[in-house]
Length: 178
Image 1: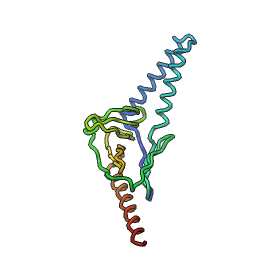
Image 2: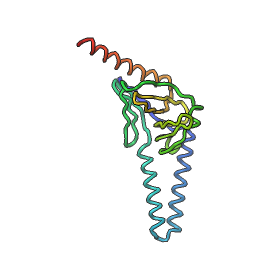
Image 3: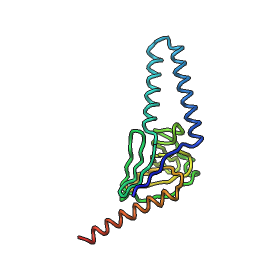
Image 4: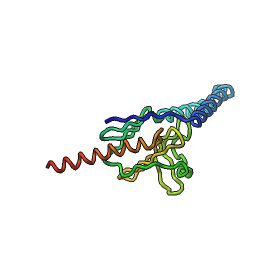
């Protein structure tokens, strides 16, 4: 069984991406015009481009639920959570995310992803969201929390719970056959 859920950026995220892109281009143009070939504007420009490219490489693309894993695929990286390690899956209201701020990650630039700090519980969570709604919180046995967004959170939660139940049944069947 494989279920795939593609990330599609919402309107707000697309507007933020456009704004950031235009600001970076304006900054690059300004440094080019006013820089006069000196090293300081060139190094600032190279640093801004490097940071932007690092963000681009971490953009979530899709989630895949297999019989054994939940995979969150980004452009260059992948987060893989074994379904046997998932302790809790639940829908999360957007109001609970109001006190969550990005520490190392993006807030709207091609989505919402990275490490975020929840100011109410003082917990660090990993966010992989394409929109600032339809949140699903996943907690593993190591108490790491992941927050993802899905177009249909109920269907995503049901698919993930089916994979967890199937994995648990296989474990019990394996123990009984010994």
